[in-house]
Image 1: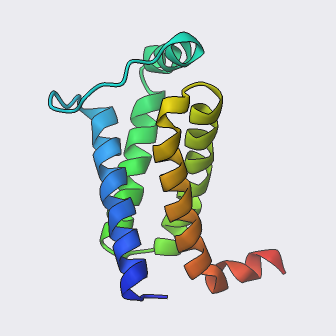
Image 2: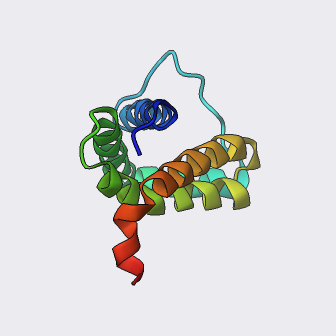
Length: 126
């Protein structure tokens, strides 16, 4: 469960979540901005206009990233990340296909880490 491969994937996913979580809470000037068009732009604008949805998602991403980075409650963090990952994937699949690669990478990392911790989740399905 704690092989070098798993540690590397956990750290990469944790750092990515911390970065994207912070980017939702603070606007990084050095980060290239992806311009959304069409339905994706309308959707992101409506989420931004609520004033709290993107901040809540950012806090969750930051929290989950810190849990993964510090190797605390990893199965719980991966379980919290699953619905966020699914929404990231569906958003990019249906509204913003240029960002689909990142969504697939996040899905793959989450799926591999869940698989590596599967014995913790097994009682949920009995």
